[in-house]
Image (tube, rainbow, N blue to C red; front, top):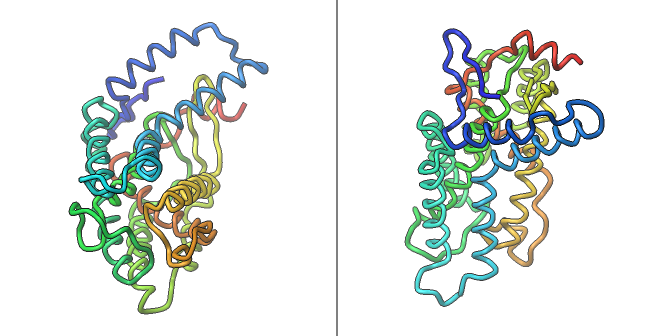
Length: 301
């Protein structure tokens, strides 16, 4: 299951821990049915396990946020936001120490962390959302743990590339996707002062990625799906996580100040556009590759 190398491009190698898990999985699943109901269940189980493994940073962050809400004492000497920041730093250190992320991937995660924190500083200043005003580990009104939530999205993106050995057909040019990602980022700031271009940018996203098919390896099976519904599905899950986080009081939108209510469904579009920025950053490290002949045949079955 380890990715193979394409000439002129770096291989998407599993980390040392992932390679060990991969070898163990091979031993456990060797000889198991490849077809029929049991074969389908095995593929489904492996898919869910890989997705859970890819989401580990975000899942741990969400656990920290919920745990801080439910069990962290209000009168503790260390402010709740500072405790969450320290926990987030420890999670990131653990991701590296246990070889869950490679050094090449870390710079993309850090870059998304920085771009997310910059946007947080601006958005809290204009009143788009707000955090509790406790703690000292903060920049202005933004507690430092907020940047790790963006890092969690970036972590998922780089890890899922490796775990599923993602391949693509008809992927748009990197220069074009980079221009659109830059425009999306600028619009998150500029729409407060001028016409909001999000729907135009969304149309460009559809135009660029609508022809793209994604090929992903599960266990024995290689499947293909249109890429745009995948973007939408990931955005939906991020929106669900955001509802859990706001319900836990990690931050609040103005509409939630007088009592919690679900985050507006329009935020799914915002998350989709923000996720595009992360996707483009990942392609700077892992250039989109075409499926090989074996994958094309397997996906056509």
